[in-house]
Image 1 (tube, rainbow, N blue to C red):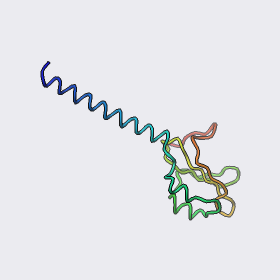
Image 2: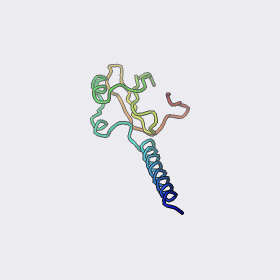
Image 3: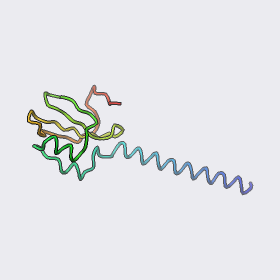
Image 4: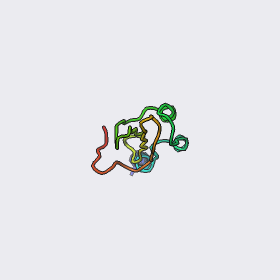
Length: 110
């Protein structure tokens, strides 16, 4: 074998290893990453106003009504974890949860 042939295979193997590391890191981020940073999640409290929540997390990626309560969802649509915040009629946080995945029968927004 000549030097050029060996160099080709070394470069190819290196590129495959780098690509494997990138794919693995991205997969871990999608499956195990929190919906929002924990330092922000720790600031969330029942009784906060919608304005206070928006100040911490920004705009939700999904808004709706569930169980007659306004609901906001935060997180990245590629991640497994989502933050769900529900508000009472006064516009204050009544409950929230940081959970894995969607509820049965629910479809991911695109």
